[in-house]
Length: 511
Image (cartoon, rainbow, N blue to C red; front, side, top):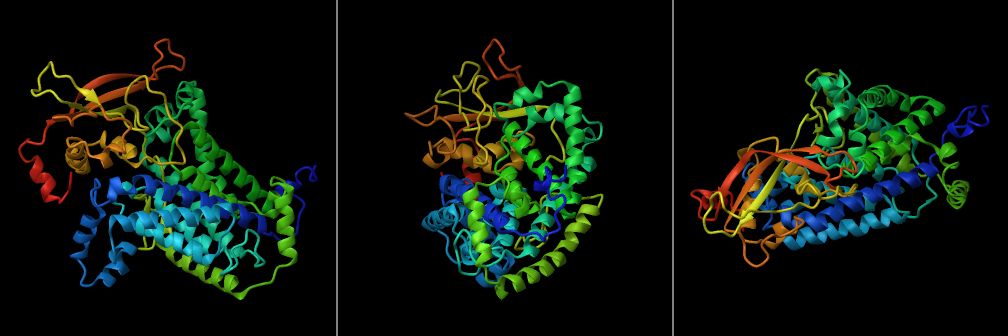
Protein backbone atom coordinates (compact mmCIF):
# COMPACT_ATOMS: atom_id res chain seq x y z
CA UNK A 1 0.00 0.00 0.00
CA UNK A 2 2.81 2.42 0.89
CA UNK A 3 4.48 1.68 -2.43
CA UNK A 4 1.36 2.82 -4.28
CA UNK A 5 1.40 6.05 -2.28
CA UNK A 6 5.13 6.60 -2.67
CA UNK A 7 4.50 9.64 -4.88
CA UNK A 8 3.03 11.35 -1.81
CA UNK A 9 6.16 10.65 0.17
CA UNK A 10 4.96 7.78 2.35
CA UNK A 11 7.80 5.54 3.41
CA UNK A 12 10.52 7.94 2.22
CA UNK A 13 13.16 9.23 4.61
CA UNK A 14 15.39 10.94 2.05
CA UNK A 15 15.81 14.72 2.45
CA UNK A 16 13.62 16.87 0.22
CA UNK A 17 15.08 18.18 -3.03
CA UNK A 18 13.68 21.08 -5.04
CA UNK A 19 15.23 21.01 -8.50
CA UNK A 20 11.91 20.31 -10.20
CA UNK A 21 10.05 22.53 -7.73
CA UNK A 22 12.21 25.49 -8.70
CA UNK A 23 11.71 24.76 -12.38
CA UNK A 24 7.90 24.66 -12.13
CA UNK A 25 7.65 27.62 -9.75
CA UNK A 26 9.70 29.90 -12.00
CA UNK A 27 7.61 29.00 -15.06
CA UNK A 28 4.48 29.91 -13.10
CA UNK A 29 6.04 33.13 -11.85
CA UNK A 30 7.17 34.12 -15.34
CA UNK A 31 3.65 33.49 -16.62
CA UNK A 32 2.11 35.71 -13.95
CA UNK A 33 4.54 38.54 -14.63
CA UNK A 34 3.85 38.13 -18.35
CA UNK A 35 0.10 38.54 -17.81
CA UNK A 36 0.65 41.51 -15.48
CA UNK A 37 2.84 43.38 -17.94
CA UNK A 38 0.65 42.45 -20.91
CA UNK A 39 -2.26 44.11 -19.09
CA UNK A 40 -0.10 47.22 -18.75
CA UNK A 41 0.74 47.19 -22.46
CA UNK A 42 -2.96 47.03 -23.36
CA UNK A 43 -4.52 49.16 -20.63
CA UNK A 44 -1.74 51.20 -19.02
CA UNK A 45 -2.01 54.40 -21.06
CA UNK A 46 -5.84 54.63 -21.07
CA UNK A 47 -5.83 54.14 -17.29
CA UNK A 48 -2.75 55.98 -15.94
CA UNK A 49 -1.13 57.66 -18.94
CA UNK A 50 -0.94 61.41 -19.39
CA UNK A 51 -4.42 61.36 -20.93
CA UNK A 52 -5.64 58.42 -18.86
CA UNK A 53 -8.61 58.21 -16.54
CA UNK A 54 -6.37 58.71 -13.49
CA UNK A 55 -3.09 60.17 -14.79
CA UNK A 56 -0.10 58.94 -12.82
CA UNK A 57 1.66 62.27 -13.35
CA UNK A 58 -1.06 64.13 -11.46
CA UNK A 59 -0.85 61.54 -8.70
CA UNK A 60 2.93 61.89 -8.31
CA UNK A 61 2.76 65.69 -8.50
CA UNK A 62 0.37 65.75 -5.56
CA UNK A 63 2.40 63.24 -3.53
CA UNK A 64 5.63 65.02 -4.36
CA UNK A 65 4.50 68.11 -2.44
CA UNK A 66 4.91 66.11 0.78
CA UNK A 67 8.64 65.52 0.29
CA UNK A 68 11.64 67.81 0.04
CA UNK A 69 13.48 65.84 -2.64
CA UNK A 70 12.67 63.28 -5.30
CA UNK A 71 14.93 60.76 -3.59
CA UNK A 72 13.14 61.11 -0.26
CA UNK A 73 9.85 60.58 -2.10
CA UNK A 74 11.33 57.49 -3.73
CA UNK A 75 12.33 56.07 -0.35
CA UNK A 76 8.76 56.47 0.94
CA UNK A 77 6.95 55.33 -2.22
CA UNK A 78 9.40 53.31 -4.33
CA UNK A 79 8.74 53.77 -8.02
CA UNK A 80 11.05 54.34 -10.94
CA UNK A 81 8.64 56.98 -12.26
CA UNK A 82 9.64 59.57 -9.66
CA UNK A 83 12.72 60.24 -11.82
CA UNK A 84 11.02 60.31 -15.20
CA UNK A 85 7.42 59.83 -16.24
CA UNK A 86 6.09 60.05 -19.77
CA UNK A 87 3.83 57.96 -21.92
CA UNK A 88 6.87 56.67 -23.80
CA UNK A 89 8.46 55.65 -20.51
CA UNK A 90 5.32 53.77 -19.45
CA UNK A 91 5.21 51.92 -22.76
CA UNK A 92 8.92 51.07 -22.76
CA UNK A 93 8.84 49.75 -19.18
CA UNK A 94 5.71 47.71 -19.93
CA UNK A 95 7.36 46.07 -22.94
CA UNK A 96 10.59 45.43 -21.02
CA UNK A 97 8.47 43.63 -18.46
CA UNK A 98 6.72 41.59 -21.16
CA UNK A 99 10.01 40.52 -22.75
CA UNK A 100 11.83 39.67 -19.51
CA UNK A 101 8.85 37.76 -18.12
CA UNK A 102 8.60 35.81 -21.36
CA UNK A 103 12.23 34.78 -20.91
CA UNK A 104 11.41 33.51 -17.43
CA UNK A 105 8.30 31.75 -18.72
CA UNK A 106 10.25 29.77 -21.32
CA UNK A 107 12.98 28.80 -18.88
CA UNK A 108 15.63 31.51 -18.53
CA UNK A 109 15.83 33.17 -15.13
CA UNK A 110 18.43 34.52 -12.77
CA UNK A 111 18.43 36.92 -9.84
CA UNK A 112 19.02 40.16 -11.85
CA UNK A 113 16.19 39.36 -14.29
CA UNK A 114 13.73 38.65 -11.50
CA UNK A 115 14.92 41.67 -9.51
CA UNK A 116 14.25 43.94 -12.50
CA UNK A 117 10.79 42.39 -13.00
CA UNK A 118 9.96 42.86 -9.32
CA UNK A 119 11.11 46.49 -9.25
CA UNK A 120 9.38 47.36 -12.54
CA UNK A 121 6.08 45.87 -11.44
CA UNK A 122 6.29 47.58 -8.05
CA UNK A 123 6.93 50.86 -9.86
CA UNK A 124 3.65 50.45 -11.74
CA UNK A 125 1.68 49.27 -8.70
CA UNK A 126 2.76 52.32 -6.71
CA UNK A 127 1.38 54.71 -9.35
CA UNK A 128 -1.63 52.55 -10.30
CA UNK A 129 -3.99 54.14 -7.76
CA UNK A 130 -7.53 52.72 -7.89
CA UNK A 131 -6.71 50.36 -10.75
CA UNK A 132 -4.01 48.60 -8.72
CA UNK A 133 -5.73 48.40 -5.36
CA UNK A 134 -6.19 44.62 -5.48
CA UNK A 135 -4.55 42.18 -3.08
CA UNK A 136 -3.03 40.11 -5.85
CA UNK A 137 -0.78 42.99 -6.89
CA UNK A 138 0.99 42.80 -3.52
CA UNK A 139 0.87 39.00 -3.70
CA UNK A 140 2.68 39.05 -7.05
CA UNK A 141 5.31 41.38 -5.61
CA UNK A 142 5.84 39.21 -2.54
CA UNK A 143 6.01 36.04 -4.62
CA UNK A 144 8.32 37.70 -7.13
CA UNK A 145 10.65 38.95 -4.40
CA UNK A 146 11.09 35.43 -3.05
CA UNK A 147 11.68 34.23 -6.59
CA UNK A 148 14.81 36.42 -6.78
CA UNK A 149 16.48 34.24 -4.16
CA UNK A 150 15.51 30.90 -5.65
CA UNK A 151 17.57 31.66 -8.77
CA UNK A 152 21.35 31.65 -9.18
CA UNK A 153 23.03 35.03 -9.29
CA UNK A 154 24.06 34.73 -12.94
CA UNK A 155 23.29 31.35 -14.52
CA UNK A 156 19.92 31.74 -16.35
CA UNK A 157 19.53 28.15 -17.57
CA UNK A 158 16.31 26.21 -16.75
CA UNK A 159 18.40 23.77 -14.69
CA UNK A 160 21.42 25.69 -13.36
CA UNK A 161 24.15 23.95 -11.42
CA UNK A 162 23.39 25.88 -8.25
CA UNK A 163 21.21 23.85 -5.80
CA UNK A 164 17.81 25.39 -4.94
CA UNK A 165 17.91 27.00 -1.44
CA UNK A 166 15.41 25.14 0.77
CA UNK A 167 14.70 28.10 3.15
CA UNK A 168 13.03 30.07 0.33
CA UNK A 169 10.57 27.23 -0.28
CA UNK A 170 9.67 27.36 3.40
CA UNK A 171 9.04 31.09 2.97
CA UNK A 172 6.75 30.35 0.02
CA UNK A 173 4.82 27.93 2.24
CA UNK A 174 4.56 30.68 4.83
CA UNK A 175 3.09 32.87 2.09
CA UNK A 176 0.60 30.10 1.17
CA UNK A 177 -0.35 29.75 4.82
CA UNK A 178 -1.07 33.48 5.17
CA UNK A 179 -3.05 33.63 1.92
CA UNK A 180 -5.44 30.91 3.02
CA UNK A 181 -5.66 31.63 6.73
CA UNK A 182 -6.18 35.33 6.01
CA UNK A 183 -8.97 34.54 3.57
CA UNK A 184 -10.58 32.04 5.94
CA UNK A 185 -10.47 34.28 8.99
CA UNK A 186 -11.83 37.36 7.21
CA UNK A 187 -14.79 35.31 6.01
CA UNK A 188 -15.94 34.02 9.38
CA UNK A 189 -15.38 37.47 10.94
CA UNK A 190 -17.07 39.61 8.31
CA UNK A 191 -20.24 37.97 6.98
CA UNK A 192 -22.74 35.75 8.77
CA UNK A 193 -23.48 33.84 5.57
CA UNK A 194 -20.09 32.13 5.92
CA UNK A 195 -21.21 30.87 9.32
CA UNK A 196 -24.73 29.79 8.31
CA UNK A 197 -23.24 28.16 5.17
CA UNK A 198 -25.31 30.16 2.65
CA UNK A 199 -22.67 32.41 0.99
CA UNK A 200 -22.27 30.19 -2.05
CA UNK A 201 -26.00 30.46 -2.75
CA UNK A 202 -25.24 34.04 -3.86
CA UNK A 203 -21.55 34.07 -4.82
CA UNK A 204 -21.68 32.75 -8.39
CA UNK A 205 -24.29 35.32 -9.39
CA UNK A 206 -22.79 38.30 -7.57
CA UNK A 207 -19.05 37.74 -8.16
CA UNK A 208 -17.32 40.45 -10.24
CA UNK A 209 -17.14 38.67 -13.60
CA UNK A 210 -18.97 35.32 -13.92
CA UNK A 211 -17.87 32.85 -16.58
CA UNK A 212 -19.94 30.38 -18.68
CA UNK A 213 -20.01 27.77 -15.88
CA UNK A 214 -21.12 30.23 -13.18
CA UNK A 215 -24.87 29.85 -13.88
CA UNK A 216 -24.57 26.08 -13.71
CA UNK A 217 -22.98 26.30 -10.29
CA UNK A 218 -25.47 28.94 -9.17
CA UNK A 219 -28.47 26.68 -9.80
CA UNK A 220 -27.06 23.73 -7.89
CA UNK A 221 -29.18 22.67 -4.87
CA UNK A 222 -28.77 24.45 -1.53
CA UNK A 223 -27.22 21.37 0.11
CA UNK A 224 -24.43 21.51 -2.50
CA UNK A 225 -23.75 25.18 -1.73
CA UNK A 226 -23.62 24.47 2.00
CA UNK A 227 -21.17 21.65 1.38
CA UNK A 228 -19.07 24.10 -0.67
CA UNK A 229 -18.86 26.50 2.26
CA UNK A 230 -17.84 23.72 4.64
CA UNK A 231 -15.21 22.59 2.16
CA UNK A 232 -14.04 26.20 1.83
CA UNK A 233 -13.58 26.47 5.60
CA UNK A 234 -11.69 23.17 5.71
CA UNK A 235 -9.42 24.21 2.85
CA UNK A 236 -8.71 27.72 4.12
CA UNK A 237 -8.59 27.15 7.87
CA UNK A 238 -7.30 23.59 8.38
CA UNK A 239 -5.35 22.38 5.34
CA UNK A 240 -2.82 25.28 5.41
CA UNK A 241 -1.40 24.10 8.75
CA UNK A 242 -0.17 20.94 7.06
CA UNK A 243 2.00 22.76 4.50
CA UNK A 244 4.65 22.82 7.25
CA UNK A 245 4.20 19.14 8.06
CA UNK A 246 6.19 16.06 7.04
CA UNK A 247 6.38 15.22 3.36
CA UNK A 248 3.17 13.10 3.02
CA UNK A 249 1.02 15.63 4.91
CA UNK A 250 2.56 18.51 2.97
CA UNK A 251 1.91 16.84 -0.38
CA UNK A 252 -1.70 15.99 0.51
CA UNK A 253 -2.31 19.55 1.75
CA UNK A 254 -0.75 20.89 -1.45
CA UNK A 255 -3.07 18.75 -3.58
CA UNK A 256 -6.11 20.00 -1.67
CA UNK A 257 -5.06 23.60 -2.21
CA UNK A 258 -4.36 22.99 -5.91
CA UNK A 259 -7.78 21.42 -6.50
CA UNK A 260 -9.40 24.30 -4.60
CA UNK A 261 -7.82 26.88 -6.92
CA UNK A 262 -8.66 24.87 -10.04
CA UNK A 263 -12.30 24.78 -8.94
CA UNK A 264 -12.26 28.56 -8.52
CA UNK A 265 -10.76 28.97 -11.99
CA UNK A 266 -13.58 26.89 -13.49
CA UNK A 267 -16.32 28.78 -11.63
CA UNK A 268 -15.48 32.43 -12.32
CA UNK A 269 -13.09 35.06 -13.68
CA UNK A 270 -10.95 36.15 -10.75
CA UNK A 271 -8.07 37.72 -12.66
CA UNK A 272 -4.70 36.05 -12.04
CA UNK A 273 -5.16 35.52 -8.29
CA UNK A 274 -5.84 31.78 -8.64
CA UNK A 275 -2.89 31.04 -10.93
CA UNK A 276 -0.64 33.21 -8.78
CA UNK A 277 -1.67 31.28 -5.67
CA UNK A 278 -0.99 28.04 -7.53
CA UNK A 279 2.53 29.33 -8.21
CA UNK A 280 3.28 29.65 -4.49
CA UNK A 281 1.55 26.33 -3.75
CA UNK A 282 4.14 24.57 -5.94
CA UNK A 283 6.47 24.97 -2.93
CA UNK A 284 4.42 22.33 -1.10
CA UNK A 285 5.78 19.68 -3.47
CA UNK A 286 9.35 18.46 -3.70
CA UNK A 287 11.03 16.43 -6.40
CA UNK A 288 9.84 13.12 -4.96
CA UNK A 289 6.30 14.13 -5.98
CA UNK A 290 6.90 16.17 -9.12
CA UNK A 291 8.99 13.47 -10.82
CA UNK A 292 5.77 11.42 -11.01
CA UNK A 293 3.80 14.15 -12.81
CA UNK A 294 6.34 15.89 -15.06
CA UNK A 295 7.57 14.56 -18.42
CA UNK A 296 10.57 12.26 -18.24
CA UNK A 297 12.84 14.54 -20.28
CA UNK A 298 12.40 17.30 -17.68
CA UNK A 299 13.11 15.04 -14.71
CA UNK A 300 16.18 13.74 -16.52
CA UNK A 301 17.47 17.30 -16.95
CA UNK A 302 16.96 17.92 -13.23
CA UNK A 303 18.86 14.75 -12.33
CA UNK A 304 21.75 15.76 -14.58
CA UNK A 305 21.86 19.23 -13.03
CA UNK A 306 21.90 17.73 -9.54
CA UNK A 307 24.76 15.37 -10.44
CA UNK A 308 26.80 18.29 -11.77
CA UNK A 309 25.78 20.74 -9.07
CA UNK A 310 28.23 22.94 -7.25
CA UNK A 311 27.18 24.57 -3.97
CA UNK A 312 27.22 28.36 -4.08
CA UNK A 313 27.57 30.56 -1.02
CA UNK A 314 25.46 33.44 -2.38
CA UNK A 315 22.11 31.62 -2.60
CA UNK A 316 22.57 29.86 0.74
CA UNK A 317 23.58 32.90 2.73
CA UNK A 318 21.03 35.15 1.10
CA UNK A 319 18.20 32.66 1.62
CA UNK A 320 18.84 32.63 5.38
CA UNK A 321 19.12 36.42 5.46
CA UNK A 322 15.81 36.74 3.60
CA UNK A 323 14.21 34.23 5.99
CA UNK A 324 15.22 36.39 8.97
CA UNK A 325 13.91 39.51 7.23
CA UNK A 326 10.56 37.89 6.40
CA UNK A 327 10.13 36.63 9.95
CA UNK A 328 10.69 40.12 11.33
CA UNK A 329 8.31 41.69 8.83
CA UNK A 330 5.71 39.02 9.62
CA UNK A 331 5.15 40.29 13.17
CA UNK A 332 2.52 42.95 12.30
CA UNK A 333 1.01 40.58 9.72
CA UNK A 334 0.44 37.89 12.35
CA UNK A 335 -0.90 40.48 14.78
CA UNK A 336 -3.39 41.57 12.12
CA UNK A 337 -4.52 37.98 11.44
CA UNK A 338 -5.10 37.40 15.16
CA UNK A 339 -6.94 40.69 15.63
CA UNK A 340 -10.76 40.71 15.68
CA UNK A 341 -10.41 43.88 13.58
CA UNK A 342 -8.47 42.07 10.87
CA UNK A 343 -7.80 44.03 7.69
CA UNK A 344 -7.38 42.11 4.45
CA UNK A 345 -5.06 42.88 1.52
CA UNK A 346 -2.81 45.26 3.43
CA UNK A 347 0.93 45.94 3.24
CA UNK A 348 2.87 46.78 6.37
CA UNK A 349 6.13 47.71 4.63
CA UNK A 350 6.69 50.05 1.71
CA UNK A 351 8.25 47.32 -0.46
CA UNK A 352 5.28 44.96 0.04
CA UNK A 353 7.61 42.14 1.05
CA UNK A 354 5.23 40.55 3.59
CA UNK A 355 1.52 41.26 3.34
CA UNK A 356 -1.84 40.18 4.68
CA UNK A 357 -4.42 38.75 2.31
CA UNK A 358 -8.10 37.90 2.03
CA UNK A 359 -10.86 37.62 -0.52
CA UNK A 360 -14.67 37.78 -0.41
CA UNK A 361 -14.87 38.66 3.26
CA UNK A 362 -18.42 39.69 2.44
CA UNK A 363 -20.62 38.31 -0.31
CA UNK A 364 -23.26 40.43 -2.04
CA UNK A 365 -26.78 39.04 -1.97
CA UNK A 366 -27.93 41.02 -5.01
CA UNK A 367 -26.14 41.85 -8.23
CA UNK A 368 -26.37 45.44 -9.38
CA UNK A 369 -24.94 46.69 -12.64
CA UNK A 370 -24.26 50.18 -13.95
CA UNK A 371 -25.28 50.71 -17.57
CA UNK A 372 -23.74 53.75 -19.26
CA UNK A 373 -25.95 55.19 -21.99
CA UNK A 374 -25.50 58.07 -24.39
CA UNK A 375 -27.61 59.99 -26.86
CA UNK A 376 -27.11 62.39 -29.74
CA UNK A 377 -30.61 63.86 -29.32
CA UNK A 378 -30.56 67.57 -28.63
CA UNK A 379 -33.21 67.40 -25.92
CA UNK A 380 -33.40 64.91 -23.07
CA UNK A 381 -36.92 63.75 -22.26
CA UNK A 382 -39.04 60.61 -22.12
CA UNK A 383 -38.66 60.13 -25.89
CA UNK A 384 -34.87 60.35 -25.99
CA UNK A 385 -33.09 57.57 -27.85
CA UNK A 386 -30.48 56.21 -25.42
CA UNK A 387 -27.84 53.76 -26.62
CA UNK A 388 -25.75 51.67 -24.19
CA UNK A 389 -22.00 51.23 -24.01
CA UNK A 390 -20.88 47.63 -23.52
CA UNK A 391 -17.85 46.62 -21.49
CA UNK A 392 -15.47 43.90 -22.58
CA UNK A 393 -16.27 41.46 -19.80
CA UNK A 394 -18.85 42.78 -17.34
CA UNK A 395 -22.57 42.01 -17.86
CA UNK A 396 -24.53 44.47 -19.97
CA UNK A 397 -26.97 43.24 -22.56
CA UNK A 398 -28.95 40.37 -21.12
CA UNK A 399 -28.24 38.20 -24.16
CA UNK A 400 -24.47 38.64 -24.08
CA UNK A 401 -22.57 35.44 -23.37
CA UNK A 402 -20.34 35.16 -20.32
CA UNK A 403 -16.61 35.40 -21.11
CA UNK A 404 -13.60 33.31 -20.17
CA UNK A 405 -10.80 35.81 -19.52
CA UNK A 406 -8.77 34.70 -16.49
CA UNK A 407 -5.92 35.08 -15.81
CA UNK A 408 -6.28 38.31 -17.79
CA UNK A 409 -7.73 41.27 -15.90
CA UNK A 410 -9.97 44.00 -17.31
CA UNK A 411 -9.39 46.61 -14.63
CA UNK A 412 -12.14 49.05 -15.63
CA UNK A 413 -14.71 46.23 -15.63
CA UNK A 414 -13.80 45.33 -12.06
CA UNK A 415 -13.99 48.94 -10.87
CA UNK A 416 -17.40 49.48 -12.43
CA UNK A 417 -18.56 46.43 -10.44
CA UNK A 418 -17.39 48.13 -7.22
CA UNK A 419 -18.92 51.44 -8.32
CA UNK A 420 -22.38 49.86 -8.50
CA UNK A 421 -22.20 49.39 -4.71
CA UNK A 422 -21.50 53.07 -4.05
CA UNK A 423 -22.47 56.55 -5.24
CA UNK A 424 -20.86 58.68 -8.00
CA UNK A 425 -19.11 60.99 -5.52
CA UNK A 426 -17.10 58.00 -4.23
CA UNK A 427 -15.88 57.18 -7.74
CA UNK A 428 -14.42 60.43 -9.13
CA UNK A 429 -12.72 58.64 -12.04
CA UNK A 430 -16.14 57.87 -13.52
CA UNK A 431 -16.71 61.58 -14.21
CA UNK A 432 -13.51 61.64 -16.23
CA UNK A 433 -14.64 58.54 -18.12
CA UNK A 434 -17.91 60.29 -19.02
CA UNK A 435 -16.07 63.44 -20.08
CA UNK A 436 -13.90 61.37 -22.40
CA UNK A 437 -16.88 59.50 -23.85
CA UNK A 438 -18.51 62.87 -24.58
CA UNK A 439 -15.45 63.55 -26.73
CA UNK A 440 -15.21 60.06 -28.28
CA UNK A 441 -11.76 59.72 -26.74
CA UNK A 442 -9.92 56.82 -28.39
CA UNK A 443 -8.11 55.77 -25.22
CA UNK A 444 -11.25 55.50 -23.12
CA UNK A 445 -13.11 53.73 -25.92
CA UNK A 446 -10.30 51.17 -26.17
CA UNK A 447 -11.30 49.98 -22.70
CA UNK A 448 -14.86 49.30 -23.86
CA UNK A 449 -16.34 46.67 -26.18
CA UNK A 450 -18.22 49.07 -28.47
CA UNK A 451 -18.77 52.66 -29.50
CA UNK A 452 -22.48 53.35 -30.11
CA UNK A 453 -21.56 56.72 -31.63
CA UNK A 454 -18.89 56.16 -34.29
CA UNK A 455 -19.79 59.20 -36.39
CA UNK A 456 -20.16 61.87 -33.73
CA UNK A 457 -19.80 61.86 -29.93
CA UNK A 458 -22.92 61.78 -27.79
CA UNK A 459 -24.34 65.04 -26.51
CA UNK A 460 -25.43 63.61 -23.15
CA UNK A 461 -24.57 60.55 -21.05
CA UNK A 462 -26.35 59.01 -18.09
CA UNK A 463 -25.82 55.94 -15.91
CA UNK A 464 -28.69 53.65 -14.88
CA UNK A 465 -28.69 51.08 -12.09
CA UNK A 466 -30.17 47.61 -12.74
CA UNK A 467 -30.68 44.49 -10.67
CA UNK A 468 -29.40 41.41 -12.53
CA UNK A 469 -30.35 37.78 -11.92
CA UNK A 470 -29.18 34.63 -13.68
CA UNK A 471 -31.65 32.82 -15.89
CA UNK A 472 -31.40 29.01 -15.74
CA UNK A 473 -28.92 27.60 -18.27
CA UNK A 474 -30.71 26.80 -21.52
CA UNK A 475 -33.58 29.20 -20.82
CA UNK A 476 -35.94 29.37 -23.81
CA UNK A 477 -35.35 33.12 -24.17
CA UNK A 478 -31.73 32.46 -25.04
CA UNK A 479 -30.67 35.13 -22.54
CA UNK A 480 -28.16 34.75 -19.74
CA UNK A 481 -29.67 37.36 -17.45
CA UNK A 482 -32.94 38.95 -16.52
CA UNK A 483 -32.77 42.47 -15.19
CA UNK A 484 -34.95 45.04 -13.50
CA UNK A 485 -34.44 48.78 -13.55
CA UNK A 486 -33.69 50.13 -10.08
CA UNK A 487 -33.24 53.83 -10.85
CA UNK A 488 -30.87 56.51 -12.03
CA UNK A 489 -27.32 56.24 -10.68
CA UNK A 490 -26.18 59.41 -12.44
CA UNK A 491 -28.57 61.81 -14.14
CA UNK A 492 -27.83 62.95 -17.72
CA UNK A 493 -24.77 65.17 -18.06
CA UNK A 494 -23.29 66.98 -21.04
CA UNK A 495 -20.20 69.07 -21.67
CA UNK A 496 -22.24 72.15 -20.75
CA UNK A 497 -23.58 70.76 -17.44
CA UNK A 498 -22.82 73.41 -14.77
CA UNK A 499 -19.70 72.55 -12.79
CA UNK A 500 -18.77 69.55 -14.95
CA UNK A 501 -15.96 71.19 -16.92
CA UNK A 502 -14.72 72.85 -13.72
CA UNK A 503 -14.44 69.43 -12.06
CA UNK A 504 -12.31 68.17 -14.95
CA UNK A 505 -10.06 71.24 -14.88
CA UNK A 506 -9.72 71.14 -11.08
CA UNK A 507 -8.32 67.63 -11.28
CA UNK A 508 -6.17 68.55 -14.30
CA UNK A 509 -7.83 65.80 -16.29
CA UNK A 510 -7.75 65.86 -20.04
CA UNK A 511 -10.44 64.78 -22.55
